[in-house]
Image (cartoon, rainbow, N blue to C red; front, side, top):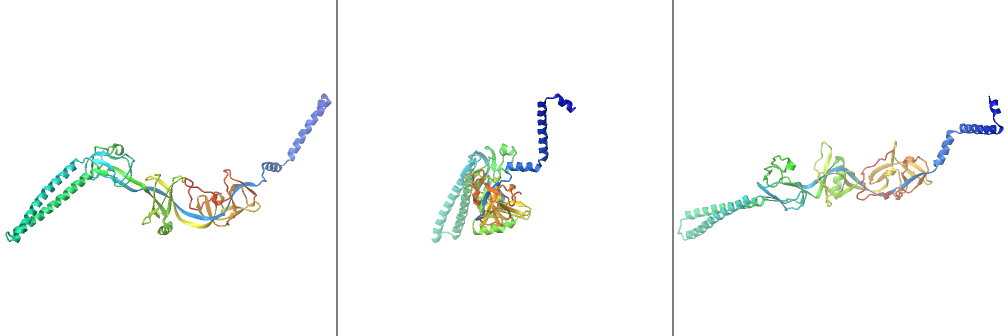
Length: 431
């Protein structure tokens, strides 16, 4: 059949056909002889697989490392006052705005003073009457004393007059006390702020009857739902400058705190819930006098100036307390530390731009720096980025980070106010 097919083709056509078949057979033979390993090698060569691994590096340095204790705290007013009326009467006026910052002695509200003005007038009249009687009795006693010296009057009459004068003096003293009390009651119709602070929402509306235990006619409908209550204050005042934060620490950390507190003040920082912004700086004000047996913790109170009013009562904050400073610590960026089956380790850069795995013992962490207590010397360089692409003995090439910052100094990683807080504990890196 092939001979018949060839006979029908011209000589040129047969030559072209044979060439095509020869090329196809050669391509098939080449493909069968080429191994997957040679293809992989060619691919790796094209991809630069034998080139050094680019990394960033940092030099271990000697510096002081602060030791922080971290806890979660609650902001509390330094003083919190429920302003209650001290006399009963009609709430005639309110002289504050809700949320306003007020000063001690500032007028907050007024109770109808007219009934108390009448009581003052009555007490003054009673005092005036009894004072007149005392003056008359005293004049008579002076005369009796002269007559008694002249032996012109009975001694018993003088004695009786002395008793009358003494009785009237007691009455006048009682009248003066009653008048002072009436004036005090009148003064209490002006409700003034006992402390400087921020007032809360108004609890009682003007026109309600109030007593010494709060509202008699009912509270603010928006706050109490119109329910009559006898324990509603006129308003509350929170002292927020300065302000305090309370937090608990484990009992095993208490000796360190007490030792530092006896020698000097202990700095405290308040951070927001995300630990990204430092809200304020303060110091420890007091340590509780007992340990909570249920939790094994002790409460500590810190005081902050709160000059920018960033701390608010009942706000939850992250607290960092400086209890010690370790001097002459070998530190590296925390990003240089990895953790494996044998513990923490770093990649140390050798003279020929090769890396070796070095097991290390980590200490405290401050910001993004970690102290190395064993396994590393000052001046040695470690890899800080690209650890996942390295192996022991591998070649590396130190490059500048993409942000353009230098990574050749351990102390070059800092955050000021508004940066990330220190951990205060050794930080383990993911393997």
